[in-house]
View 1 (tube, each protein chain N blue to C red):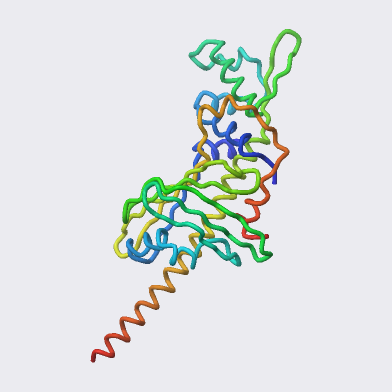
View 2: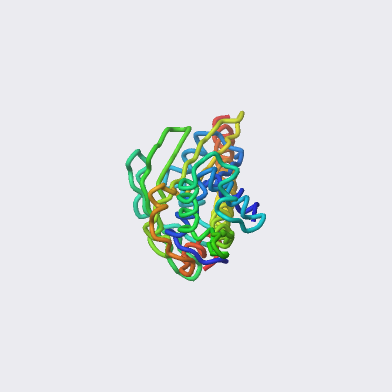
Length: 124
Length: 153
């Protein structure tokens, strides 16, 4: 399991809360890209794109490097994996809790049915 | 990778299950500590309830004790308690690297004939403010909670 901390996870979840940032990641999943290529499909300014990229970089989701005079971005997927593992861990936990609750409810239901039957018999 | 994006893009874990019991009984199993302790916690764990006040603003604190006696304490506050429809509470581990980090759990109870559907959400509460927080890297762990969650010690 990828090890991660609460603060780092917060950054990833926050970064993913925005549809433009998710679209940027989806684009980068196809391969690395320059900042202006990334900005192209969106109807927003370059500085706005830069802000989104900064958020993604702070969350550890993208790496930037210079290719001559062009800045290129690449996806770093491991924090995403950690975030989806976080969700999976809790899903398993709650599924187990639900199993246990279902068993408990079945048990108590049977007990109360038995008691009702007993009572009815006693009354007869 | 795209599956990972899709998994996390809702930012919240959502799951549901139908229980073959009346809604009042299912709701009570969550808010009555004498009932909760009989089913709460992973298999093989014992639940110790220290505080449990299921009223709005009320606190809870409990421990899941693993078969090896390691303790996983958890506390929080009931935000909303609407019999027999809805419950929400904060969720804070006391140990591990998630210690002190507030999460939110919401539970909706819907009657389906004589059965009850539960819809549960568990969210990591990402605030926009967290974006500016310093990225802490990926080296530390929250093994303590991992183990409790995975039902092993």
